[in-house]
Image (cartoon, rainbow, N blue to C red; front, side, top):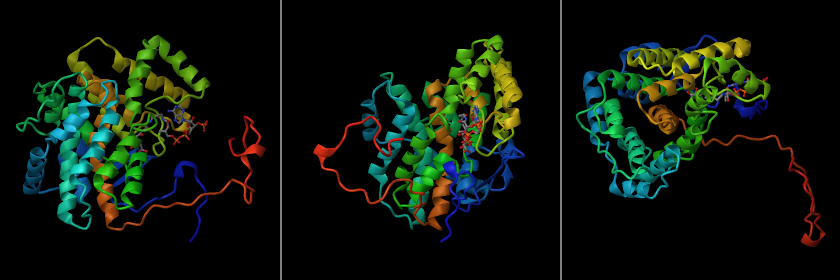
Length: 389
Ligand code: SDX
């Protein structure tokens, strides 16, 4: 067995072979199953894209209709899960509520028939169908309201927006939201997908796999950045303050939320599309709140300062502006990222089951050897214990 050179964060180390998606970070290219993200964003829908990612081909009309109908049928969640969510603190973050309730699905459907294609398909449908309902349910219940039941007249994205507000959304806004889901559906071996794969490699149930991935996505260095971008724009407050604010972050070696990427060293192709959607929404609503203009100025200053280091907007920089314009609460931005990425996580789960080998990397040991056991009365109490540094 050859031991690879150690690479912090496994940078550049292949963890699997996959045909699900492809990223060219130098040229800003993203393809799902060989199809450019720009084409899918323009011509496809999230559910059709999820089908493509998970089953490896674009569905026929009959296959897509059957997939959409089955998902529509499975949108509701058990009352026991709703009752459990009623016990969550209203101040809890929706990502923690989602991780808990996603894992709870395993209490109802945990039979691990991973060699049974029917079980695989049922798990795919249940997770794609129920995750949006759980996100919307917590949003309602944390305010003491009853959850809004799914509206079976509405398609996937319109129904989610309906469950958030109990109002049928504007079709253009529902379409824009659906494009956002397509853009967030998959992105090769990012941290949360890798987390899903490691969990899946032990052959546990798919609900535990998704719960692992949700927990990983929540961090501000990953999916949690979209919410942090709006906080940053609030703190900046005005175009005049952009430069001093950014210069201070750089001087303090702090990360600028929504910028940089382990793979992209140019502007994330998803950010380009999300910026267009944000511009469209800000133009149509005509509001004078200048978040969009502020964001454009932040991008301009960061490019001037850090463009030479390959630090450009990533998927999280403009997505929050779109969601905010759609009236979505900020702390739901990352759960929405999770709703979309369930498709990618499931695609990698299914692909891996075909060639599974449990993930068990090695390490470079930096500790000591052959130390004797010290009786407690002889131990010295000091601030610096060996191995603490
Ligand atoms: C997502 O992997 C994926 O595909 C993820 C994702 C997906 O679809 O799944 O694309 C989604 O997670 C997007 C990223 C969202 N996170 C953020 O916006 C948080 C801010 N970004 C950074 O934390 C950072 O860019 C990461 C985490 C995204 C990438 O980190 P890396 O690859 O480990 O890079 P690094 O931290 O080693 O930085 C390399 C250099 C450093 O400078 P030097 O010490 O070499 O001088 O670039 C600098 C960093 O300081 N740098 C930044 C920066 N990102 C990198 N400096 C300021 N602001 C930033 N955002």
